[in-house]
Image 1: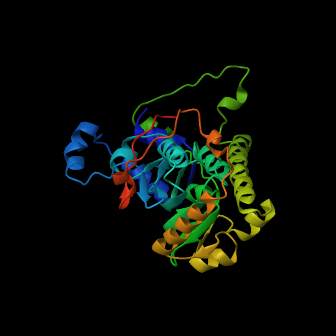
Image 2: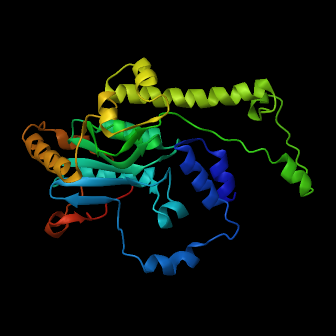
Length: 314
């Protein structure tokens, strides 16, 4: 399946204009291969893993459009993989030298698939180590879903947050196929009449709308749980699918405060040091099944945003 077909068939929790931009990239007729892009990649500085370290704080970078797994977009176009963030989250939780975690967000959102699982993992990590989401620029749709799962959300003055909801687009290619002389017939098993709803009928449109509404309800329910408010509050006060800027988002309780990155980092670092003395004696037993925690070298911990040693995949 071509990249365009995959992108068009997936439901997105992402700002509409960014979905259009992503589809434009995926629709380029000259398919670019990793080999063709390797020279361009080699000319750039190595960004390393998504997980960085500043003192005792592990930083997970959620940047650009987000996808469930790694692909050309994540490898060469600055996008983010939920799976990669999940592995880096586990690394940060397991590393004794990391005492607090920051989710640094600047993203319009991404695929629905995988977003809820990562958000659940972030939410379930509350209490093990302090977790703060810092939104700089954009924290919308799926990106806000992730940020809401943290203990606290801090945003820059001009940050855009919200866009709670799900979008699913269906492209009608019948006329284009007719011009190209293409005729397609789909045979669906008799036991599965709902497998190919006809979106040209009211009944078919209703089935697709129900799918989108159900996904949207999962989104709203998660945000309500993470932010400690009712679903009705999320629906009525959290932008109704629109976005809010900085202080306005604080007033609506979509986020906790307006702040700057370095100040937020210092506060989070102090929280991490304070929480070290209050951890239960058996907290190490909460590790995942991936084996013992990775040991980080002094060189990896010192300085700014350096990479930890790799650990096994989940």
